[in-house]
Image (cartoon, rainbow, N blue to C red; front, side, top):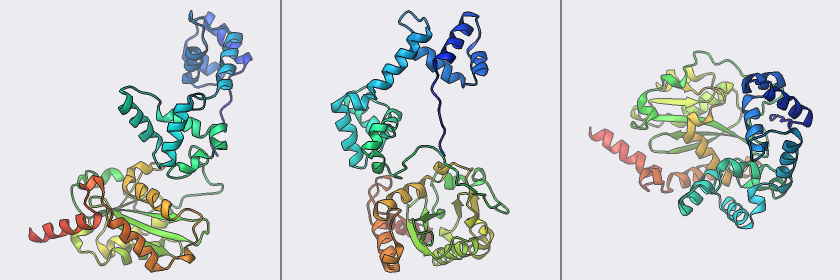
Length: 326
């Protein structure tokens, strides 16, 4: 579940005013009220008068009026049209904010303001979250009830991963993940090579560690040793038998820090693209293995800006040819 935030009420505002008059610091006030010091700072900066005075009744009216008038996206029809149409075209809030700043030469609206509007009552009524890459209906990390992570033996953190993998200067460093669907038996193994962005997808019947490790071996076994330098996973128990992959392919595994998906940016971005063609409600029983391979082939033959508009297939072939000539 997400974090529940309780608005500051009039009683707390009266206590806040009294402690300000007594010369208490922001930190002591926050500790006494059981609030974060940034909450107190924000309350004073947003709800003080023009003369800088803080009055509890005035602060309550300011807060009430701000909630009543809604967000900037809701008040400004032109900005609302720009934001909603851009979201519908697949733009992220960061891209919208950056494009508006580039167009007008100054910051127009921050990406955080757009996110707040998307998850506001008005934004939820318009179902704007469906335009986001992952279609999350709520913000924040939500732990599954009863979920316990399986310890991963011989886990090597991502800090020990070779620098060539971090800066994408060497071919053969992979990232792996599982993509799940509404039907729990529908699982796809996805693998992406970091430098060339070459993409592999394979259906997996179960998510136990032995099945997943065998699937990784089957998927990467045809590649030469020059293309098998390392692989990076999250901390899911399905990757617990990474040593079996290393013994078979000579492919050491590295693991991200908990709740840090950006440390595997390539595979996370690829899975986001995959959700466009295979949403979560997709039934994999309607797709043959050939259909899945055709979809991977489509991705591998799509030009990428980061590759100088070459395709991943062209990039990996060129890298292999260059390695063989050395």
